[in-house]
Image (tube, rainbow, N blue to C red; front, side, top):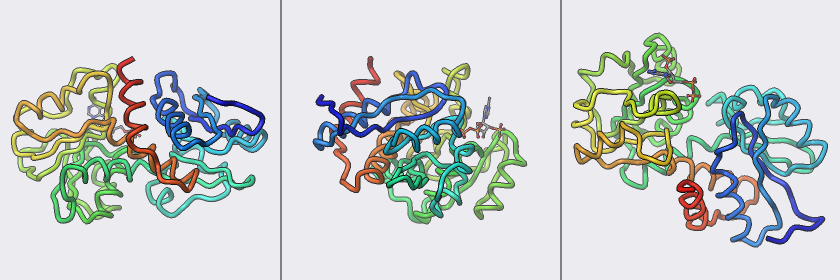
Length: 271
Ligand code: ATR
């Protein structure tokens, strides 16, 4: 890697970011395209100060992750319609001092699913009603899928269903659910909830495709169960990869070197 006075800086902000796979993907992309830039991970509790740093030292772009995707919004100069509708920014571009926010999470979800199944008129059950669910549901509806939202707190599912025009239920009331695709956007399977599935195994029988946005070195319990029933599974790293490719394109205006990014992601994941 060549670093000199003209090298541009990009990075990810969040807390924690110590295990982020984004630096591996984006540095591979810059190298592959011969772009004189580096991408680092910045752990910070203050999106406001991070934005100030971007302006002060001319950082060219940011990925934004948990817990700053919503709280960063007031500090940016412009936010596109999509990010406003989702209510979260996961990508910032600095164009000559003007900071623009967008959201590529929905693109990640849609592309990861479309690689294995058509979405138009397809029935999809989304588990969860938090920030990640909003991005996934936005993408699914844009692709004309029919969405059912199931969440532990049923009222939250109800509010989201009303906003986006979907059906809804509690997570404990899935008996009548059928559809082709199931997507988990809850945090079940992650951190302290590792090894746990958000739904009973038998429920998975009826789905053709099961996607989990939770990812890690091993497949989540949900995806292991789904595989046992012969469902096509889509791992969380697929969404991660596709949203990162869209970030690269937003920053550089160039087509993302998808295969190089995938290779770097897989290598970083097994480390
Ligand atoms: P994110 O931005 O990652 O979506 P979030 O907005 O905090 O995070 O949303 C977390 C989601 O995981 C919510 O749908 C939450 O359900 P509630 O709305 O009932 O809180 C869901 N979730 C978290 N822990 C859960 C658990 N143990 N069982 C079921 N759902 C859970």
